[in-house]
Image (tube, one colour):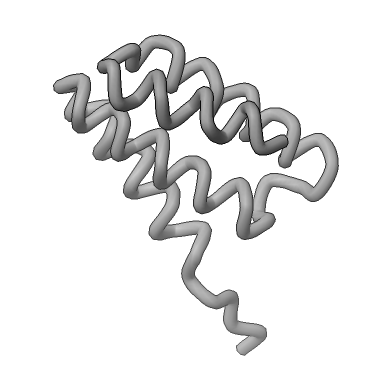
Length: 79
C-alpha cells in the first residue's frame, strides 16, 4: 500500500534502520510465499535490504545479500 511505502521512506530518512530491515524482510517473505524465491520482486527487495545494511554498517550481511542477488539475477542457460 502507499502508506507502507511512505512509512518505509520516512523510517529510512529518520535512520530507523531496524524498522526498514524489518519491512524488507517481511516483504521478501511475502513475495517468496506468493511468487517464489527467484521472482524479480524478491531480488529487488534483497538488493534494497543489502543497501540498508550498508547504511547501517553491516557490511558482511550486505556483501552476502549482494552476492545472492547477483547469482539469482543471472540468466539461466539451458545448455
